[in-house]
Structures are given as structure tokens and as C-alpha cells.
Length: 72
Image (tube, rainbow, N blue to C red; front, side, top):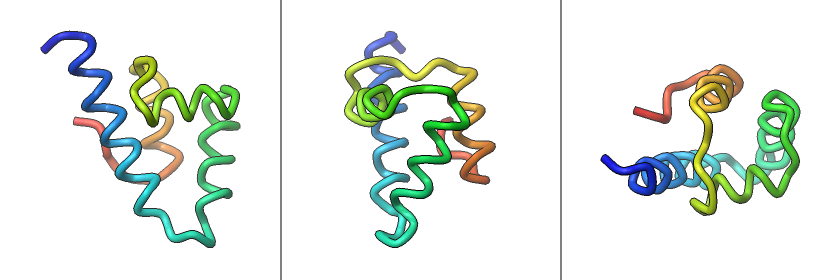
């Protein structure tokens, strides 16, 4: 699998998870991910839309924050 394919697969997984969050919890979950990964909001958006690859350490941190496995 190429780096671009991995980035697309990971971004789809992240986007699917974030889209599944109830509206009342949406902002809080995004805030926890941003603060937990020590990133800016635009970086999370870039990850969601496949504009850049999500580093493996950040994938693990995201899964730790949300309490479930979304990346395979």
C-alpha cells in the first residue's frame, strides 16, 4: 500500500468517526483530539480530508482519546 493510499484510508476512518459523533459532543471531542495531540485545528482538518498523513503516534493518541480503535 502506498503512502497516499494509507493517508486516504486513515483520513476516511477519522472522518467517519468524527461524522458519527452526536452534534452535542462534536466540539468537545475535536477539542480533546487537538489538545491531546498538541496540534492546531487546521491540522486536524487536514487529517480529516486527506491533505496530509496522520503520523502513527498521533493515530495511537487519537484512539486513546476516543476510547476505540478506528485505524487498522
